[in-house]
Structures are given as structure tokens and as C-alpha cells.
Amino acid sequence: MISISQRKHQTTVSSNRRRYRKSHIKFVRATINIKRKNKPRKRRYSRLKRPRILDKQIIICSVFFLLFIGIIAWNIFGKRDEPERVVVTESVSDDELDIKKEFIPVNPYSRPGIKIDKINGVVVHYTANPGADAMSNRDYFSNLRYTHTTKASSHYIVDLDGTIVQCIPLTEMAYASNNRNSDTIAIECCHKKKNGQFTKKTYEALVKLVVMLCKKYKLKANDVIRHYDVTGKICPKYFVEHEDEWKKFLLRVSKQLNRKQQ
Image 1: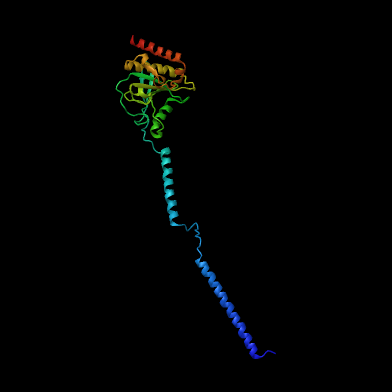
Image 2: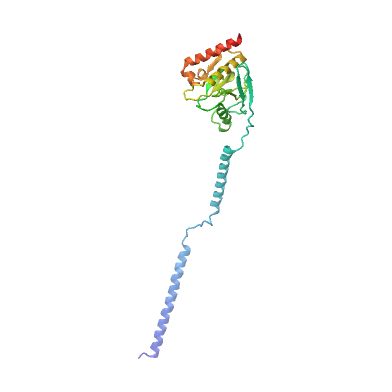
């Protein structure tokens, strides 16, 4: 049998062991917590909690993006400052010409507004835009003040049906024939096919218009030239590739001028 003293001893030993285990567990837990506290943690940002610097960058980028979209929209759909189109018809009874004055607003790309002191010739061109009518080509010249793609214009455009549209006053220079812009009148002619051949109505209207200008500025048939004769550009294409047709055209102009003078 176990004595009372032995039982007390066993009880004391077991209680001491329990206390030691508890203290050891507390020590281990404390050590782990200290290590966790000292260990650097990675920052994790939720969608709702982002750093302030990132928010500012997003706001600035959004503002610039909206401004960019606004500028593009204004250029495409914005109001044009061109006044309402007013058609003024000038009829010349003896030549049966129907001239519609649709002047382009003054701008650096198609109507510089530079005055011409003296007219020494007439230059014939073709639009190089098969099937397009006179007003389409006139509007192309006018829109160059927005697109800035090139500098181009002419005083007259002869339509497929023989109608004549005047884009620039005869007292001002057009951007048409390089170094002859300052002393010539430019005439663009519409055409249906790629070969540049004019319709019969366009051809007849061109003859009458050239005769009228030669008579007005006291010019001869030799003063009527092609764009090709100034810069070497294939313009008007049909008259450049068919030299005999150009000579026939000049002969026709010369005969009509002689009839007017008699």
C-alpha cells in the first residue's frame, strides 16, 4: 500500500509538471507572436482602399482622355464658321454661260486673299476625281482650311453638265499652278472617266469660258496653257496624252476669238 506521504509527493510532482507545461506553452506562443510582429508584411490593397497616389494618377489620366475625346468630337461634329451658302448667278448672254459664284472663305490653304495685279494667261486643269461634280470639288477646296492636308484651289470649276462654279474672285490668286499663280486664271474641269476626257457639255462650257476670259483680259489663244506646260504634271490628263486634241481645242478658241473681234 502507498503511504500518505508518498501520495502527497506524487501529487506535488504532477502539479509541478502541469505548471511547467503551461509556462512552456506560454513561452512558445510568446516567441511565435514576437516573430510574427517583426516579420514585414506585404501590403494588400482592396479595390475600395487604394493608395492616394494611384487615385490621383487615375483622375489625371481620365481628365486628359476626356479632353482628347472632346477635341476630336469638336473637329468632326463642331460648328463650322462658314456662312450660309449664297448662290449668285451671273449669266453672259452672248456666250450663254451660267456661272454660280460660290466663294471660298479666305484662309491660308485655299484662298490666300492675295491680289493679282495683271492677268497674263489662263491655265486649264482636270480634277483627277472621276465622277465628282463641281460642288464636291469646291467643298474639298473649302474644307482644306480644316484638314490642312495641302494648298489647292482654282477660280472656276466646270461641272459635268456644263455648269460653271466660281470659287475665288478674279482679282485674287488661287493655289493651282505654282509659279504662275500670280498672273493666271485657273480652271478645273470635272470628268467621268479615269482617262480625264471631258464630257461634251464640259468641253463646250470650257471653250466658252476661256473665250470670255481671253476677251476680257485681251489675251490670245497662245496665252491659254495646261498645268502640264507649267510644272510638267500630267494635267489635264487627256489633253496631255492627246496632244492633237489640245491643239484642236486651242484652234477652236482662236476661231471664236477671231469671230468676236470681227
